[in-house]
Amino acid sequence: MENDTRDISGAIERLLSEHGITGLSHDVRSSLGCLKYSAELPENFDPEVYFELCDSLRRELRERAVDVTVTEDREICILVFPGDNSYTGAGMSPDELLRRAAAVSVMTGGASTSLLQRRLGIGYGMATELMRNLTERGIISPPSGGYGEALICESEFYERFGK
Image (cartoon, rainbow, N blue to C red; front, side):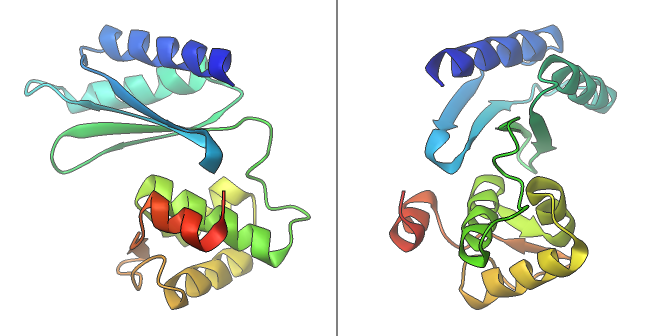
């Protein structure tokens, strides 16, 4: 995992630099099964470059799932999920599926039905049920516009679900 993380980090740093973004800080959360990188966007960042960057990241890290978001305070966040289908819900127990949904919610800052469908490889009905369970258990806020914000941090995740 350590060599893999260095390779991914190097590729991300290079691509961000090529697109005019420097000052990368990364936070590796391997116990939740994915890696998180973030950097502050320069004031003159062209929104069109965002789409080019997303395409470049997906090409470079082709065997891994990549989510790229930009926050309101001009920070770019890149989540890199494993490429070995370890986040795929096929054949998982309901408890393990809920644990993975909670992990995705904590890492991304929230959840939506479509996000859970994509990240866990599950259908709409199961994703809807997971959203309901996440809300009932206080892991995410009641969805507004289809999106519920994470209400717990990583340490609370470990307290509830273990490492």
